[in-house]
Length: 170
Image 1 (cartoon, one colour):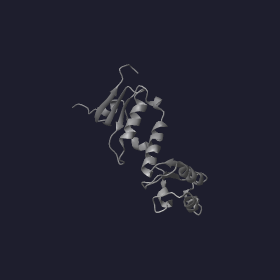
Image 2: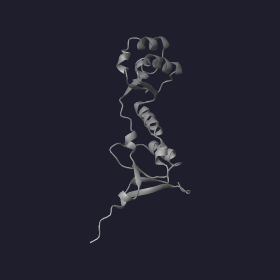
Image 3: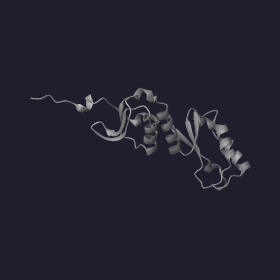
Image 4: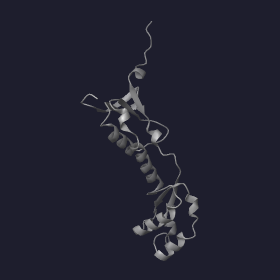
């Protein structure tokens, strides 16, 4: 009787799970709309007055997404002013909605990885998981790894879709 061989285990494939780069930190929102006259108009004096009594310490050590959900014309100084209030407390302030901020953090986490560790390797970027991951992350990981890997695939080690194969030996 022949021995069962796990060809996937012997293939030398490295599986990369993008969920490992997904930001875990809490992102708080700061919506400028709440400080606009009738939720639509920025009156400088009223805007400044609405910021004064806020308990900015609620943002201590947190990542804050700074945005305006209203379809209003917001002068750039307003974002600067709110940032100046948040800066002494917040760990980080990002422009955009919480979803956009999470995307920025996700891309930063991917970019922080040293691609050299995958030099000459056959890499499979895991396709399914518990977190829905946007195409931006797959674009980012492909851009980062393509210059160094021998081959890049998508899916699971037992069922991959070839994406890139180096023409030169690595």
